Length: 81
Image (cartoon, rainbow, N blue to C red; front, side, top):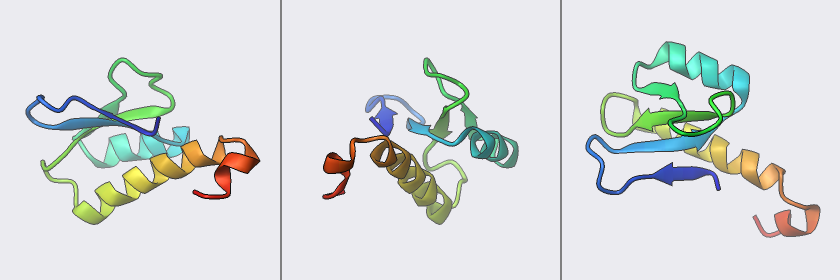
């Protein structure tokens, strides 16, 4: 799992996996990024969508989360990712 979102929540928030040092940096940079709600706060951030984070940065956070999960998959499973 690389992202977790409640579809009926306003504002929309998503939990994204993140390298620990980058997670802290993003929390410092954006008030919309907080420690992962109900997740391991060292490895997850909760991010408010559509509330001021530039789209390119948001896409980068999502891609980073996905790549972390793919990197943790067995080698045979990673070939098609």
